[in-house]
Image 1 (tube, helix red, strand yellow):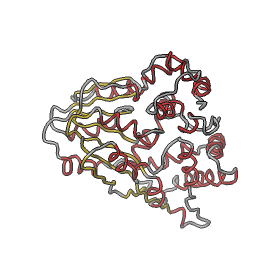
Image 2: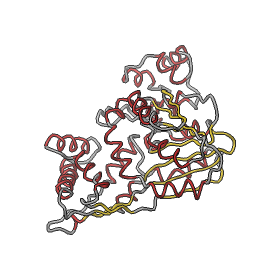
Image 3: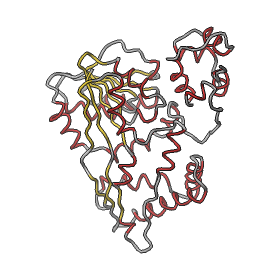
Image 4: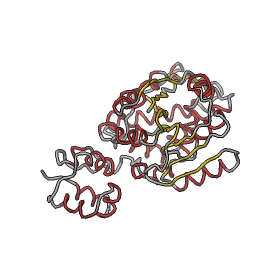
Length: 361
């Protein structure tokens, strides 16, 4: 069997030692794999696929190496740093403080201080949501690869009385030096090619009886639960079906658009108990008069602001397998929506599609 390890490594300008360090093996071991002297243990195949951002079949040489520079590299700190403002808009758009407080106080009911570990913590958003609702003495540790995000998080937490710590490390390389009561991940798992490996790593960070909480979306639920007054205006435009784009992304291991609904299955696979799932209850209504909810047009403005962003967006969709005509239809919708939400008469109704899935170690 001819594995594509060398080809994939060289495509990413990675040395044998760099790959060996990610896998926690010697560079001699990697050399033997590449020269056909030995084959990797089966447990290394999903990790190789995750590192190279390809399917396991590509690693095994069963599928050709595909070159598609248009797909995003979500394991890159540079990607998240460049997308920091969009990430903030997105989180604010989906989050429901009332419902989250209900979960913390009425469903999970922690009576003693809680030690939290947040995988892929970004700028500490989830920690800032949790700590004011938990018993005094609770603490927060954030695990993040991007130095810029960590610096921003430290700035936020420095203004609070909460105990906090940040660790700069790749999630897959992280080896916990202690166990935690609560391990969390917000909008995280859907971006990983081998979610079972990630979730198992999170489980290993839990105390016996500790809780693993994963929060993620199902974009089909969101799409079916969205309506804007633009549909009822003269020559109104309905929201196009984005599922073909999402299917392409999932098939090419960019992200899984249905992850929120799949999480209970994944938690069961790693042996967690008492698995339950909730879905955010608020259906959000956006009007221009409500300044707190102007974020909705921020997202449309981010996608379409001018002809340059129109072209960028069109390329984004054609990179994901749709025709130029269909890509233009998507971007025309964003353009019309942006113009509509600039009007005082605009209104939209939006269901988040956000799942809170948890289980116990």
